[in-house]
Every structure is written in structure tokens, then in C-alpha cells.
Length: 221
Ligand code: ADP
Ligand code: MG
Image (cartoon, rainbow, N blue to C red; front, side):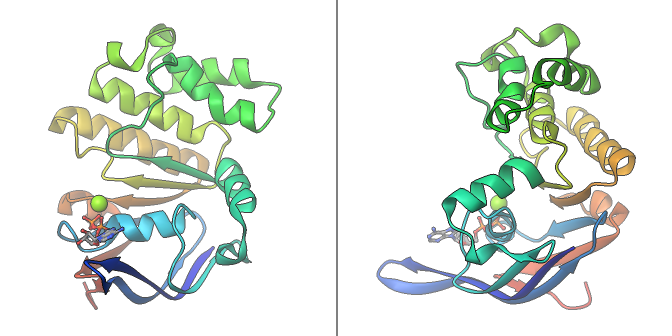
């Protein structure tokens, strides 16, 4: 379970404090599919970054499986991310100098997994890219790059998958396939899935929805 208690984020903007996320309480049960929706600039990516421990909140507590991640140092956060969180970005964020397979292997090598090679091949197959492992990101389509990014996010079998508009940079048909892949993984593995999306139809499929506007939760939405 993930629990946010009065989590907020204030940044400096033009020499003045700007609150981009107002104090927020949220509970995400294990295995839930939560959709985060809201207009551009409403704080969706900020919230996801806080959940991933990529960014620190200005106030509040973020409990992931009972651990307050706001109390962890950089090493502790890196370990948590490596073992427990898979992150899928809008712009894929693959390492351009590594092949598809090598990108997928990175988190497993960091974790020191002995089965990395076997598992890398299986992950490529799972995302339908068995014949593309030796290709570099620049040789892959956007949809294929996002498949690699999903395989990489799943490499260490994280119980939590965070995806920030993972189809925002893809055509609608490719986007559908990518979403189906994420949903298949969520269903088959029982992973908790937190998905930022603009797609109201998709958000309607989620177990729960969080609607943000100007850094605040829209109640009852
Ligand atoms: P969303 O993902 O919903 O589009 P973001 O979480 O990226 O929104 O951003 C929310 C608001 O906070 C936006 O207005 C954005 O410009 C602003 N913002 C985000 N990060 C910073 C920062 N480091 N400094 C100043 N403003 C920021
Ligand atoms: Mg965003």
C-alpha cells in the first residue's frame, strides 16, 4: 500500500514560492490501477515524481509498504527505485548508445541478477520485440522504443509501475497497444499501476481516479 499524508510541493519561481501541489492525502492499495488525470500543468508529473522518490516533497509523508520514503537518503531511494518501482516516461528515456536488450539489462545488472540474460530475452519476447534486441533506440519506432522502456521498467519485477503519459508521444493505435501491454502486466502480475493520462475513456477503466486541477484534487471527480 502507498499512503500520502499531507504531501505538498512548493518551488521557487521568479524569486517567489509557488505551490504546485497543495497538501494531498491519498491511499493506493496494492494491486490497484489508479488513473491520474487533469489538464496540463495541474501537477500530475510532480505527483508521480514524488511517488517514485525522484523528487522530495516540501511537506508531508510518503509511505511505501510502511517505509516513509521522505526519510531515505539518495542511496536508499535508488535501492527502492531499483527493486520496487518501474517508471515509464512519455519520451521513453532509453540510453541511446545501448541496444534494446542492453537497455533492458541495465536495471538487472545494477541489481546483480544472475539470470539477467535469460530474463532479458524473455522480457523482449513479452513486449513483442524478440527480433529487435540488437537494435539501437534510433533504429526503432516510437512504439517499439516504448515497448523497450516497459520491458526495462519490468526488469526487476517491481510491485509498483508508474507511467507518465506513456502514449502521449505515440499515434492512437500504437498508444492503444502500449496501454494494453501495461494493463496486461497489471492484471497478470497484480502490479499496482499508477497511470497519468489525458484519455478519459481509459481513466474510466481504472479502479480509481484522481483528478488534479491547479495542484489540488478535484473532489468527487
Ligand atoms: P502536469 O504533469 O500536470 O502537466 P507538472 O507537474 O509538470 O504538471 O507541473 C505543474 C506545474 O508546476 C506547472 O505549472 C509547471 O510549470 C510547474 N513546475 C513544475 N516543476 C517546476 C519547477 N521545478 N519550478 C517551477 N515550476 C515548476
Ligand atoms: Mg506532466
